[in-house]
Length: 293
Image (cartoon, rainbow, N blue to C red; front, side, top):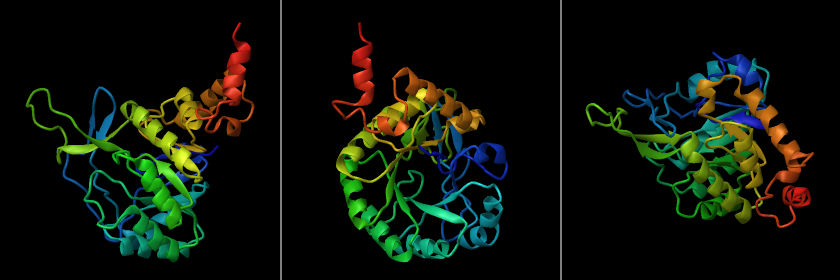
């Protein structure tokens, strides 16, 4: 089981200690041209999680390749680059440029940002274009908003994706208690944190049943118990997001808590728990039945 960060939830250059505790670092999404992002307010707390509407602010592909990438490589963990765009050829062009960089281990295609207009092509068309452009592993980051996310998962698998990142944030809105106006500048943003977890678990569960692709589970993982639930639903790897804003020690803590949870369920190897929520004779269920007086 690898532990990563969710894209945009950790600045490795200002928090290298936290990044170095991960098995891979995922960059903020890189787009072909620089983006200033959405108007403030961009981040807001709610009772059930966090809303953000950053709008893919980034220096653009050219500056990322010339300046940022080499600095990130010095952190000493494998680098995954989150790739964004507004047309399939933009994703493909960035993927081709990154294909030549040895610093990059894998690409995560951001196919589901709720804070910008969607690309007109389908997720499968974007994956197919990027598959031609790069030999590096491609992980498709999907939205939980689709009625049948497993259908999209099957489509990107057929198009050449090597894995799935599940899930991105889902659209939400918060109202200021005094003015009754939307808190965020663009009004609507992406909801992350604890409220997202049941939605994310459902997506992981559905896609594990529908495809053979490895899954990185994310969405409201705050502790080791949350991590175990994602693994049980089919996630092979995990990514931390909102929790990193408040707890820089989260990677170390969640690993420790996950090991304790596995031990409590009588599972020696975390790989044996992957997808056990679907398995009639899973080691967790067998252990639980043997432990029942």
